[in-house]
Structure formats: C-alpha cells, structure tokens
Length: 237
Image (cartoon, rainbow, N blue to C red; front, side):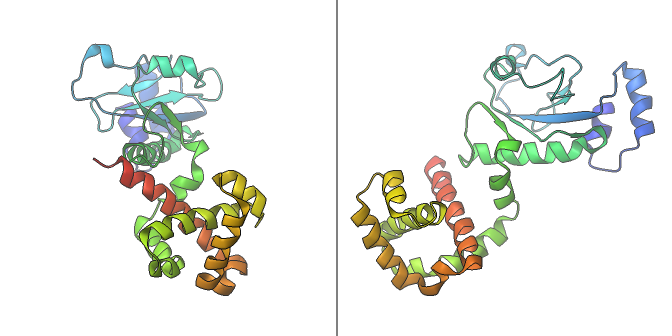
C-alpha cells in the first residue's frame, strides 16, 4: 500500500505517507530514486534482485520496480555492488527526487527502460537517467521529434541513402566540433580533404542554415535523433 501510494501518480500527502510508513516500520527518507527492472519470462526466486536495506520492491508490477531511500547517501547506488545485487538484470535508475515525487522518478526510469529495449540507450547493465537527460528529453515527444527531423533534414532527402548517412554523420560532427575540420576528420577517421568535400556538398544543400544559430540547434537535435534512430533500427529484430 505504501509503494502504491508513492508511485501511483496522484497527489501524495506527507501525512498519509507517514501513517503507512509507521505501519510498515519504514523510516521515511527525504529523497528517493526508483529503479525500473527489465522483466524476465519466469519469476524465479534466483532472478529476484537483492534489495538494498530499506528498499521497497514490487516484482509483480510491469515493469518490476524498486524504490531506494537516500540513493545519494547510505543507500547510494554503489556501482559494481549495486549491479551485482540486480543479478544481471538490466535496469534503469530514475532521478533522485523528494519522497512525495517518487512517481516522477518511476516515470523517467520506465521511459529509459523502454529506450534500452530499443537500443537507443545501452541494452545491458544499469542506466542512470541522470547520465542521459538529453536523450530522454529528445524522446519525450516522439511525434514532435519526427516533425523536427523531417523539417530540419529535408535537404538530405534529395541524396541517396548512402550519401545521406555519410553527410549526416559529417554534419553532426562538424556542428559539435565547432566547425573544426581536422577535429571532424579525427573523430570520423577520414582525411580532412574528405571532410571539406562533404562540407561543400552540405553548403549546397543547406545554404545559410549552416550558419544560423537557431537552425544549427535544430540540426544538432535532428541529427542526434537520426543517429539514435539508426541504432534503434539496427537493434530491431
């Protein structure tokens, strides 16, 4: 009942939390984080995670979830030790939030777990949402993201699929690298002259947009989504 109250998504009364916590003999922490766990085909006892002290665990929900108190203190996610406690089960750790906002941490962790399943975030191990905020933000509204990609990258629709991939990769590296050709060449492991040739092609396709700050931001977001989408397509069965 306590876990359902904290993760239900509705308004959470501190008084109600205190009452249920008292009955459950659970010390109410100031902050918590929620871990969303990848489901397994069978509910074997050997697959159950070893919960940290004071954690509230619900293995019957979909996805299974674990609420960890004081995650940045005594209950902190101790790297290898925490990963071992999960017994090899992939998991996503939501952001640290006040205890009455635990549902927000669960929402973020669940979204991250979904992106892990698609290969957009690492498929195995433990993913911390705090390390992937830009990707989670980017995929927060995929319909809007699709519109952004279609509009910002429309000039690439005029080239072949092979050219599109190479030009998109080069453009993203150039935008992120401060328009530094040698840095782009080193990052992509190609000759600087190849970078300059591709940039001339991109100038013809995009024109002034390559030098407009707002357009450059749209291009970075769209190209980042394009590269992550390629990972998604590669990971799909």
